[in-house]
Length: 208
Image 1: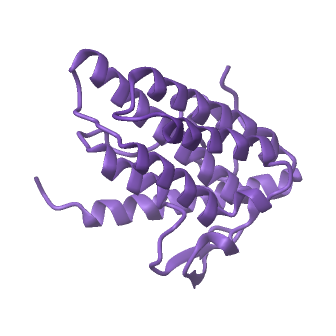
Image 2 (image 1 turned 180 degrees about the vertical axis):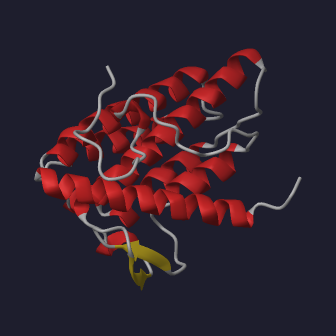
Image 3 (image 1 turned 60 degrees about the horizontal axis):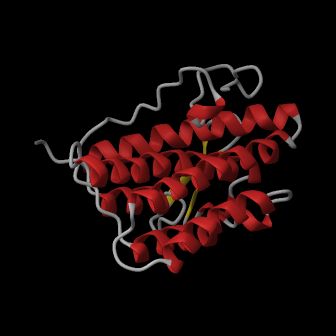
């Protein structure tokens, strides 16, 4: 069951949906290709462009070229957010293969392996205490892609979705290990970073 990660901060924060009650992520629901979705989610933590790092009070602190400078709790939230996005992507791909209905989502085995590799490498999740189970679940997704041949099957895609869900569940106690004051600061930084990400995405979208 879903539940809140403690009391909310001074403004509404946006946390991974399974950790909250009816949180609006703010991302538009639209038709997309799996390759674009994987790139967008897997590279959230891997952008080579300078990005703004937010201090605990939500104010812009400095420009950074990667997320390594982010507090561990914020990294955990961002990885959890990626797992939620990717769980939806692979389930959509499975549904399309089974019925031919909905968005035409086709995911390659190499894409999935690269997505997990990039996510783990750029987030440095393995360096965060107690993250071992979450990392193992994420690696199991890549393993599914590695062991099979040909197009990913609906069953394989559903197994991957389960892996993303299990990884996210494993990340919750990792986040909750931090002191309450730190957790509130992490939530605020995460919310501001999400807002910045959305603004960047919207600025890059050309009118249809």
